[in-house]
Image 1: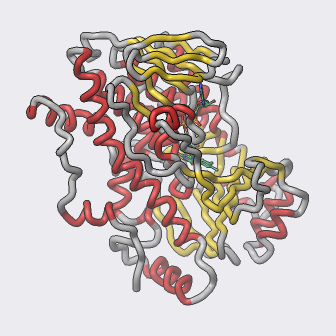
Image 2 (image 1 turned 120 degrees about the vertical axis):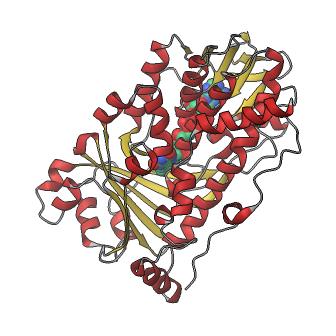
Image 3 (image 1 turned 60 degrees about the horizontal axis):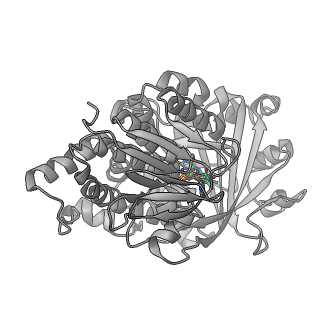
Amino acid sequence: MPSPISLDIIIVGAGLGGLAAAISCSLAGHKVRILEQTRTLGEVGAGIQVPPNASRILAKWGLMPQFQKVSVSPGAIRLRRYSDGKVLSEQPFVPDAESDYGAPYCNVHRADYHALLVSKARELGIKIILDARVQEVDFSAPSVTLSNGNQLVADLIIGADGLKSHLRSLLLGRKEAPYLTGDLAYRVLISAEKMRQDPALVDLATKPMFNIWMGPNMHAVCYLLKGGTIYNIVLCCPDNLPTDINIAPAKDGEVEELFTAWDPRLHKLFRLAHGIQKWRLENSREIETWVHQEGKFALLGDACHSTLPYLAQGAAMAVEDGDLLGELLEKIQTKEQVPDVLKIYEYLRKPRTEYVVKSSTSQRDVFHLLDGEEQRNRDRIMLADVVMPGFPNKWRDHGFRNWLFGYDTAKEAEKGWGRYVKEGRFWNSWSANSKGPQAARMRGEFRFSL
Ligand SMILES: Cc1cc2nc3c(=O)[nH]c(=O)nc-3n(C[C@H](O)[C@H](O)[C@H](O)COP(=O)(O)OP(=O)(O)OC[C@H]3O[C@@H](n4cnc5c(N)ncnc54)[C@H](O)[C@@H]3O)c2cc1C
């Protein structure tokens, strides 16, 4: 049921995180405006994976029928050896994602995902104001000043302005630029129809799978998109871009040369590719707080926890943030509760997202092992398939998978709010769930061992 009071909320940034927050806050009964710096709406890039923890939210908003028209559900994730493509470990997603988590694992083109959220936002009457770059924030009023000098006042301001967040720097009172991870991603789209003309590629082009080839210092991620008509390839490897450039076209033969010793099927795919682009992968550092002390401003999404894409969870985390915030704001009875709601939001979201960022980085160590003893151990453990905590295929480790995919924003909000009501206020001493083997596992870095 919507909150009895209606807040005036400004969301800065119409990315997937900002749109999700806008939809959830609007459904909670609040008036929402989104300020977006670009002149046209859209998403750059190619495919994106939408795991059950995010697709559950789309289903709650009634978007699943339209979403399934434009997405593909991979039957499983397959981790492969780089040189010959041998499958070392497999975790089924169909029907397991639906049967275990009540929501499917999907792959979709970013533009389709974004368009779906934009159309839901417009249907709810959310105003999306374009060409509106936020320059300054008054955290007390609260208000924002745009680069054209216009000032807009609200009850609550949410900074969803992405990896290079200007609002993060304003909140922290210092320039807080993203840092280089040392990796970059080549992104390629190929016609699946062309792939089907080559017998060696028919299997990849017809069976929807989430395939990862793991090799020395690099990995390749491939999956079908758009009803199986497009094949999406992401190649992650050490950063070779000049320092002042973040995106550039790949030179002819560049990818072929880098991946010389890799599965011949990958080379067949490269020959079908045109216009390959490479993107530097950057991360934001863990910051002390996401919420301003006046209690009228919070960050979400990549603005406060951008991650390497190695668990395919960055946007899912941004969508979870946005929805959890809306779920909490649905429960408020007075405006005075907003500062506490923001603290509860940060308390519930920060440990989870920080753990995902760490786990995505440690996933690189598993994927990128050089040929040698450690790699042979990894492969032996994967092939033996005795799944225990720390198993190198994280998607196959039940504890980790349940924690990642089983997250339900509505239930988390209910728990946080229930405790708040019972105790009468938010206590800074609310301690994170620090007991038990699950919590210990979640805090530590997973390392597999023999
Ligand atoms: C190669 C790669 C593959 C990935 N694959 C996956 C995947 O499979 N699954 C997944 O879940 N995630 C994936 N991610 C991560 C995902 O793309 C991001 O985490 C997600 O898009 C972040 O959304 P956001 O809304 O927080 O930020 P953004 O999408 O960056 O949106 C920020 C918005 O704010 C606007 N903005 C910025 N500054 C201002 C300002 N001052 N005023 C007004 N507007 C402003 C921007 O124009 C932009 O529209 C991947 C990332 C990469 C690089």
